[in-house]
Image (cartoon, rainbow, N blue to C red):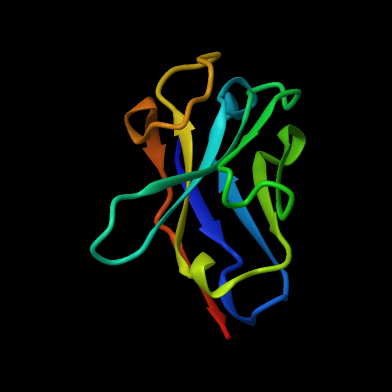
Length: 125
Protein backbone atom coordinates (compact mmCIF):
# COMPACT_ATOMS: atom_id res chain seq x y z
CA UNK A 1 0.00 0.00 0.00
CA UNK A 2 1.40 3.37 -1.00
CA UNK A 3 0.01 6.46 0.68
CA UNK A 4 0.12 10.15 -0.13
CA UNK A 5 -1.22 12.74 2.28
CA UNK A 6 -2.14 16.26 1.24
CA UNK A 7 -4.32 19.18 2.23
CA UNK A 8 -2.21 20.78 4.91
CA UNK A 9 -1.58 24.48 5.12
CA UNK A 10 -1.65 27.60 7.25
CA UNK A 11 -4.86 28.44 9.07
CA UNK A 12 -5.86 30.75 11.90
CA UNK A 13 -6.92 29.39 15.25
CA UNK A 14 -10.56 28.39 15.15
CA UNK A 15 -10.39 27.56 11.48
CA UNK A 16 -10.75 24.27 9.63
CA UNK A 17 -8.74 22.08 7.30
CA UNK A 18 -9.45 18.81 5.60
CA UNK A 19 -6.60 16.40 5.09
CA UNK A 20 -6.79 13.69 2.48
CA UNK A 21 -4.79 10.54 2.01
CA UNK A 22 -4.80 8.76 -1.32
CA UNK A 23 -3.86 5.10 -1.37
CA UNK A 24 -2.73 2.91 -4.20
CA UNK A 25 -3.63 -0.73 -4.57
CA UNK A 26 -6.90 -2.55 -4.97
CA UNK A 27 -6.85 -3.89 -1.40
CA UNK A 28 -7.21 -0.51 0.33
CA UNK A 29 -10.66 -1.44 1.62
CA UNK A 30 -9.16 -4.23 3.73
CA UNK A 31 -6.78 -1.97 5.67
CA UNK A 32 -7.50 -0.05 8.82
CA UNK A 33 -6.17 3.50 8.57
CA UNK A 34 -4.85 6.05 10.98
CA UNK A 35 -3.66 9.63 11.22
CA UNK A 36 -0.67 10.61 13.35
CA UNK A 37 1.16 13.88 13.86
CA UNK A 38 4.63 14.90 14.87
CA UNK A 39 6.37 18.09 15.92
CA UNK A 40 10.15 18.48 15.92
CA UNK A 41 11.79 16.91 18.91
CA UNK A 42 8.75 14.90 19.92
CA UNK A 43 7.51 11.42 19.20
CA UNK A 44 4.89 10.80 16.58
CA UNK A 45 1.50 10.74 18.27
CA UNK A 46 -1.80 9.13 17.46
CA UNK A 47 -4.61 11.38 16.25
CA UNK A 48 -7.39 9.20 14.85
CA UNK A 49 -8.07 5.81 13.30
CA UNK A 50 -10.80 4.08 11.34
CA UNK A 51 -11.44 0.39 10.83
CA UNK A 52 -11.11 -1.22 7.44
CA UNK A 53 -14.90 -1.25 6.98
CA UNK A 54 -15.34 2.25 8.33
CA UNK A 55 -17.72 1.32 11.11
CA UNK A 56 -15.36 2.05 13.99
CA UNK A 57 -13.46 5.24 14.67
CA UNK A 58 -11.07 6.20 17.44
CA UNK A 59 -9.68 9.56 18.52
CA UNK A 60 -7.04 10.96 20.79
CA UNK A 61 -8.57 12.86 23.68
CA UNK A 62 -6.92 16.06 22.48
CA UNK A 63 -8.89 16.06 19.22
CA UNK A 64 -12.13 14.37 20.23
CA UNK A 65 -15.12 16.46 19.24
CA UNK A 66 -13.06 18.60 16.84
CA UNK A 67 -11.63 16.13 14.32
CA UNK A 68 -13.47 13.55 12.24
CA UNK A 69 -11.89 10.67 10.37
CA UNK A 70 -13.69 9.08 7.44
CA UNK A 71 -12.92 6.94 4.43
CA UNK A 72 -14.21 6.32 0.95
CA UNK A 73 -13.15 2.87 -0.15
CA UNK A 74 -14.44 3.47 -3.66
CA UNK A 75 -11.95 6.33 -3.97
CA UNK A 76 -9.14 4.61 -2.04
CA UNK A 77 -9.04 7.58 0.29
CA UNK A 78 -9.16 8.46 3.95
CA UNK A 79 -9.86 11.93 5.30
CA UNK A 80 -9.33 13.95 8.44
CA UNK A 81 -11.69 16.87 8.90
CA UNK A 82 -10.17 19.23 11.45
CA UNK A 83 -12.35 21.94 12.99
CA UNK A 84 -11.78 24.45 15.76
CA UNK A 85 -8.07 24.22 15.19
CA UNK A 86 -5.68 25.32 17.91
CA UNK A 87 -2.03 26.39 17.74
CA UNK A 88 -1.10 23.16 19.53
CA UNK A 89 -2.45 21.22 16.54
CA UNK A 90 0.51 22.50 14.54
CA UNK A 91 2.47 19.49 13.30
CA UNK A 92 3.29 17.34 10.33
CA UNK A 93 0.38 14.98 9.83
CA UNK A 94 0.89 11.46 8.51
CA UNK A 95 -1.59 8.91 7.28
CA UNK A 96 -0.85 5.26 7.86
CA UNK A 97 -2.23 1.82 7.10
CA UNK A 98 -2.05 -1.16 9.43
CA UNK A 99 0.55 -3.80 8.71
CA UNK A 100 -1.71 -6.54 7.40
CA UNK A 101 -5.23 -6.67 5.92
CA UNK A 102 -8.17 -6.86 8.32
CA UNK A 103 -5.97 -6.10 11.32
CA UNK A 104 -7.62 -4.01 14.00
CA UNK A 105 -6.42 -0.43 14.22
CA UNK A 106 -4.63 0.82 17.30
CA UNK A 107 -2.97 3.88 18.74
CA UNK A 108 0.61 2.71 18.51
CA UNK A 109 2.97 3.70 15.73
CA UNK A 110 4.30 0.14 15.61
CA UNK A 111 0.87 -1.18 14.58
CA UNK A 112 1.06 0.52 11.20
CA UNK A 113 3.24 -0.77 8.43
CA UNK A 114 2.66 1.79 5.69
CA UNK A 115 3.14 5.53 5.94
CA UNK A 116 2.55 8.54 3.74
CA UNK A 117 5.06 11.36 3.40
CA UNK A 118 3.32 13.81 5.72
CA UNK A 119 1.67 17.17 5.23
CA UNK A 120 2.38 20.27 7.31
CA UNK A 121 -0.43 21.88 9.29
CA UNK A 122 0.28 25.24 10.89
CA UNK A 123 -2.25 26.98 13.10
CA UNK A 124 -1.53 30.59 13.92
CA UNK A 125 -2.81 32.26 17.07
